[in-house]
Image 1: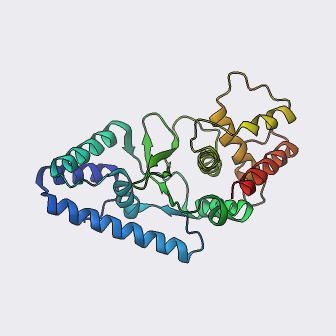
Image 2 (image 1 turned 135 degrees about the vertical axis):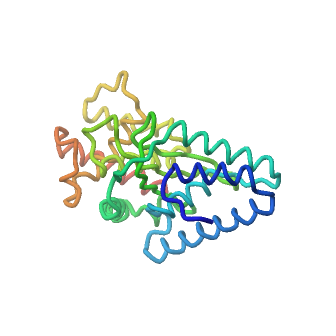
Length: 262
């Protein structure tokens, strides 16, 4: 497989193989992608975080294709998927020369999550999240958590970190933590659309009026704030107007929920 370093190159590659590949070619490509994914998981295990990987550059586009392709034994179905993925990219993504966050900053965020909530050990067991650092913008989103069902029927999630073009008050670190918050939501309830029933206790304790508030987004914000008071992240905290006492309540809530979710 050729080295791909942009969405433009990826769409060109997808359209090329859609016109030229036979089923044996698709099978070989899928095996190559699967092997690269397994290598990434092993590398993450050696680095002490077996449930997540931060990927950028050529490996990001390789694994992005792997996680967006449901390999079929039928050539025409594989061809249709390649065409559909290419169309989605062309409709929603635009390459830029900027990165949404540095690899070092993203690593700091995830190490903080690991240390504080024992993410890999207790929370996301049996799953592996890919955190894509993509030098691109999305038509409607600054960044997002992509949930999908794996071949064994389990819910999985990846994070697409993109260059913001809507919310300039957030920081790259807070955006990453926000998306991790959606994954925590998925762990606790099986979906990002429904929050734990006792999450209402948080709003009651803080006397918050959540009428008209998107609870899914508020939940993710609360998770982010529970970590942005850590020394290595305070400079990236856009929620400085929120008292530290409130953030400690968020920390207490998520510590309790994640400990009881083991």
